Image (tube, rainbow, N blue to C red; front, top):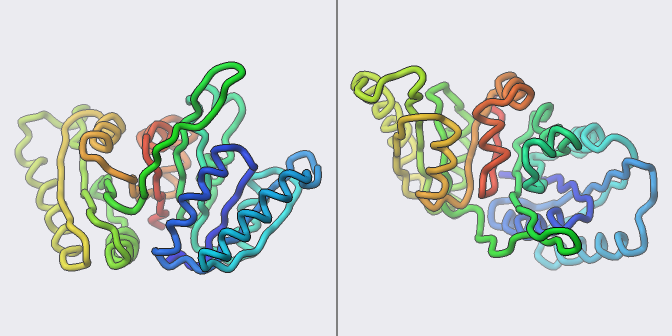
Length: 278
């Protein structure tokens, strides 16, 4: 499924925690991990960084992965995307720091830079920083990702989700897929029975398409604001990940201007697998 995975790391605690997520991919068809480090200032790896990289590669090989590394210098987003193209990867897996929106806008975000331009699926790990001055860390207690996936559906067709990603994840061990739609309160009334019927019929069609694939498929419909309800459903339904199908042009506009996808990606309490639909 994701046979060859690109793993950008910057040796922050967040990116090192992402290593646990990478290990999970062994059960989902991954055979090789390409580790990439980009030095924005052109500085070589320090002695400590070289030791960490060698340890990660050793642990990956012991887990049954093939490994390779790329050390580059330049603008991180550009180098990551060029490496993904050159190495012919099938997934980019990287950490998000969990910084707030204001700080992301000030300092920029490598993960969002990659999402703006990538044509590959991207697995975003979420590790929220904790602590104050003089005491920093990353929130612990991460559970396995590929257990219960919340799948927001906007009723626009995203065939890769239903024809490829969910069937493969199901066959490889995904326990439950929650097909989820929000009837927007800015466009429809709560008593608009026709709209709710249309949504329920569409969700049921997708549920039937996925039946027998190996995992339980359930459907849920909420009414209100899209991003808020996706985030609330993630918590209420105990999702371990969000599987988000996105159209690249729409995602680019939303990340640039502030939309539903942007808000969900920034504020999600769980990892996201973001799949381009075109």
